[in-house]
Length: 105
Image (cartoon, rainbow, N blue to C red; front, side, top):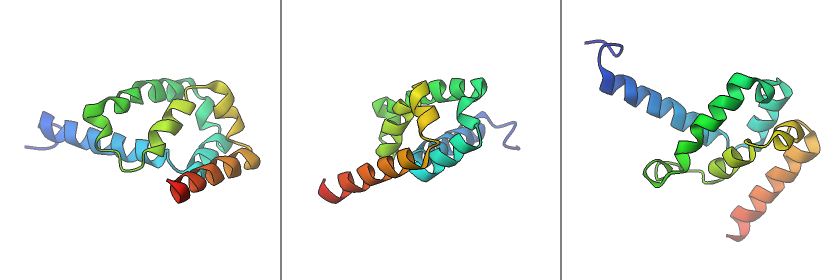
């Protein structure tokens, strides 16, 4: 049975792909790159970010290794953040705050 025919395998693949993507949101440089490519302003992508909010529910959040990913997912719901993260100074500000949090936590 192929993955397309097996719903469990298909669901697992989707889960793993979405988990990997959500965790990548913890990286300020990745967010900056998405903004510079104008991905963050595309309506389909904005809807996808809204859809991914389910990762904040406990039964899914427990799989997240990088908690900042969930914080950044929340910030990405706001147009201003999606616009400003494309600026180098915002990327550096976010990166420094993240580092300071890890250093002192």
